[in-house]
Image 1: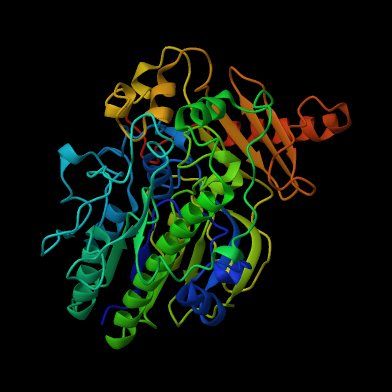
Image 2: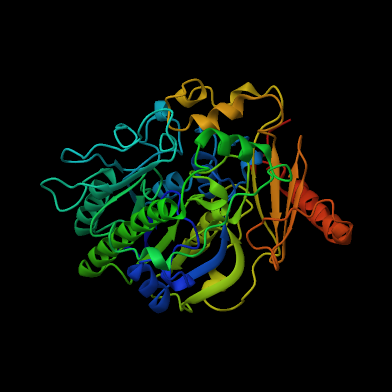
Length: 488
């Protein structure tokens, strides 16, 4: 047995931070996460990602760098060999690293050998990925074509809709049963759910009580106070005529997807316990970003807006049993950049580079209740930055592509995809936009961010304070100087 703990990184995609039972959501069915938070883990109510789409967020939490440090602001700019990656550092420090699930982290052309010992592949045929079939979409001129709503999935002869997520979870369970005796084990499970299309099989589709869903944040009557990419997406998705009953079905399906992931998490936890590895394993459960799920009349997400439904994510941590933790729900402000710093602190590893994450161990063991005075998120691009338009995506050109309403807008040179950055405290959220009107919200009275106060003179002192805090953050994090110096 190694003297270092095993690591489980359970990383669902696009899970909103408010869809968990222990966070007070009456419609959420997450019994395994709820028990985990009650008995063994710290669950952070105010955890925030550093970019609201997949690749930039993953590049950030796997390095402890904000996206602007090395320009990781698109789906097509990943971590290259000269950049640090937590998985590689663990492998170089003697961990057996098993990776099962999606990438969105390192360039596929470089392969995965530097980052893991096993890049797992499914061992049996899979059910169709909902991105590859479009029978559920309806007619191109209809109001379901860009909704991402697939609904109930049929399992055929299987007990479940056996897709890549189920295959990866089964692979992880098998690896846990065969954990190396002379190396600590790192299981990295970047799953696809609950990323839309919104579709899930029974029993999870039917177990969500529609009448228990929290109220949906409505679309504004006037989009002009808000980033114009939102108005463009709303126009392109054609969902304005949806009834609340239809929205409830979409939202309940998303909740069912979360419930399925919760069940998969429970399966992996049971495997660790059966293998007598649970106590010796540090467990991290978090999502890369959130999802609109009908809020503001939108589905999916954007690349440069920062509503809490997109940026607030689940984040639960259980240390190994030899670390005396204090299981609870923590109200501290934390960021996903803190993930890698926490791993390095827990393992006493010097990663050999400077980062901006702060270890969460003092919170986990109960030594402190506060962590950060503000959290940050960023995205978008500047004029002329064609490499950041994501023209490699079919959705940039093809109206038949599922993501066309959003990705096609990212090529406009009218400021609708402007570079932007969010500074959020416990009470306020400020968003600086390069080519559009800024945003300011008083979260104490307007947690749904429906009233942009940027021109309200009664908040000018708050605005100046938030602008100064954002500037300080940029100045502190604008770059990293390599620890190794050169000869002159």
